[in-house]
Every structure is written in C-alpha cells, then in structure tokens.
Image (cartoon, rainbow, N blue to C red):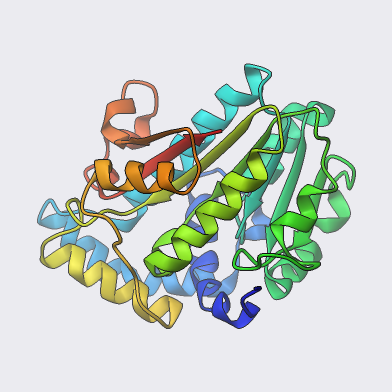
Length: 281
C-alpha cells in the first residue's frame, strides 16, 4: 500500500542547504543556488567555526565527501558500460544530473526524481535548458509501492535491456528503520528487472556519530527536517546485512578516508561521519 507523500515532505529544507554547498564548491549551477540555502549556511557558520577551531567535524566536510564519492562510483559504472540509466531519488537541488548529462550526453538517460513541489521548483530553475530525452525531472514518492508517482511505475518506462543505477543522497537517515527497509526492498525489486542494477547512497551509523558535536549536528538536522534523524545501524556489518536481507546480492559500505588518494574531499576531518553504500543486484 502506498504511503502518503506528506510522510516525505519534511526532507526538502535540507535541499537548499546542500544546494548552496555544491555551488560554493564549484560543483553546481548558479540557478540551483537559493536564498534559503545561503541563509541556512550563514546561520550555521558560527557552529562550524567553533567545531573546526577545536579540530571537530564540519558539515561541509562530509557533504562534499559523500557527494564526490557517490560521483566516483557512478562514473565507474557508466564508463564500464554496465549502467546507462540513472534515477536519482530525492534529487532536491543536486547538480549531479546536470553534470553527468553534460559529460555523457546521449550515452545515458538521467532521471531526477522528487516530490511534486521540489520537482516543479527544479523544472522552473533548469527545465528549459535540459535535453528532455536524456535528462528528465519527474515526480516520485520514495515511500509509494505503486501508483503514478511510484518507482515501480517509472521503471516500466525504462529500457529493460540496459543497466540501471538508483541514487539517494541525504535521504535514508530521515526515515525510521522500517521505512528504510521498505525503500531498500523497492529498490532491489526494481533493479532486479534489469541486466545490471546498482544502488548508491550515503548513510550515517551509530558508531561514527557519537560525541557532543555529532549530537549537536543531529539536533540541527532535526530542526531542518522538522522531524527525527535516525541512526539505524551500529556499524558497517549491520547495514550490509540489512541490505542483503532487503534483496541485494552484494552490499558494501565505503569509508571515505579509504578513498582519500583518489578524492581530495575524502581527506577532510569530518568525512568519516558518513558511509557510502554500494549495493548491487
């Protein structure tokens, strides 16, 4: 049974903040920079400076690490020829679709999917400049099992002779474990319909998010999303086991610092507050 879209609407404010981070670091288009994002960034700066001065983590550190590590694995999959169709769910103001569509052109189909209000806003910002065949912005509810705004319905429109990647960034820790497992099951069931299936995401674990500064970050994010921030799993092994239980054949969680030799942002002090999921069918 489909869940109402209202269950998902609490996430959208964070899209403005992360959108500003991507723009500030040269990864995004100026059209995806919003006033709300700039204001949120300025409001958080005193806390970030306080944390940095005490050699603590900074939100920007793990946001950049997670974004670029997801990019790295997606690029590898595209260039290997296993993935030609990408669905970024809860895409928000992410610039990834613009960058990958520009880089790979008609070699891929990139679909940015979000709730109706966010999808509509993004279309207004960049819709007129994108190739509607190979780069699309659509409405989707990640909690829907079926219906016009479900992943199942979107999957019917894809080529079933080509591989598919599903990406979520900044999504799973805003839902409780039952909803996350439901999302993962929908993803694995969808990806199993294609010759190659890849899921890339970020996740925060309990073990890496302890201490006073981490607790402050969690409270701030709770205010942003007007709800709880959930740490579902204690460690890498628990999360990988859950992904397998949800239908994935292979599941790995990557520690950003393990990729520091390839991705400079993964060297940052706060990078290891997050883990990157790479799960395959």
